[in-house]
Length: 212
Figure 1 (cartoon, rainbow, N blue to C red):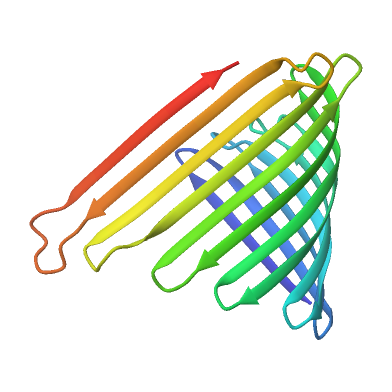
Figure 2 (spheres, rainbow, N blue to C red):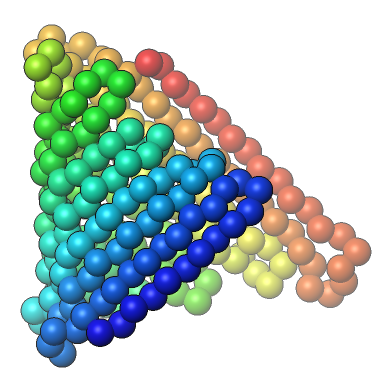
């Protein structure tokens, strides 16, 4: 049994993170984590689940979450998934979620299916995710495509790159009309010459497309 705890405080708020992990066999573990943050993030979440390695490169997991916060408005449900590591540095994850999502427009029954591909080595980290959601309420029936992409790494000892691309498309399942469309691109460069420290160059490009 492993226990962990963290307390944070600052100008943007304060909070605590508590966690526990129990290894019930050589290739499995159960966990319980609680996070409470106030201020800018204002998050309150509880997660409990387990994961088991069923083969050298395959892991299955199940998790139940209760989330409250401005970013989610409120969400609870269960997720299940399979993690596959085909080779060193590469990870593929299939997951499904069933639960409820509470927003200003009301409470929705949500079903989601996602695919995540990750690559990482000593120089580069790349994360790509595609998710399909359906939301049902007493007045709405929606489908949503969500894609996220992350890139970070070093071109050489002096030049670093960070990139992000997010896109969401929401449609009405009854009328087939587009309900909202969102896209955001961020690209950052940092040049810090290792030969001298008199010059540092930082650059950032952002693009936002939001039709709601």
